[in-house]
Image 1 (tube, rainbow, N blue to C red):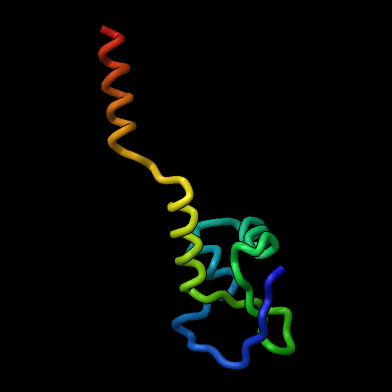
Image 2: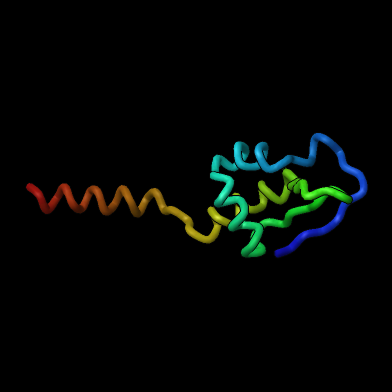
Length: 88
């Protein structure tokens, strides 16, 4: 599990657990799995168990997920068109 300690923060950049799950539209369980797998860096507030996330790390995670499984819209339409041709 990747965790780093921070001593200061910019409120516009940092999100707490609830905000991060809402931002990514995922469950708390999924968020913790991403932390455990090392896919999402988590930062602890010094002297607490509270975690914070950089908005940029969340955005990067979204880019990584979409780049690993690209969807080719043209291929989908070509397959759909070829299915129609075989039906007639």
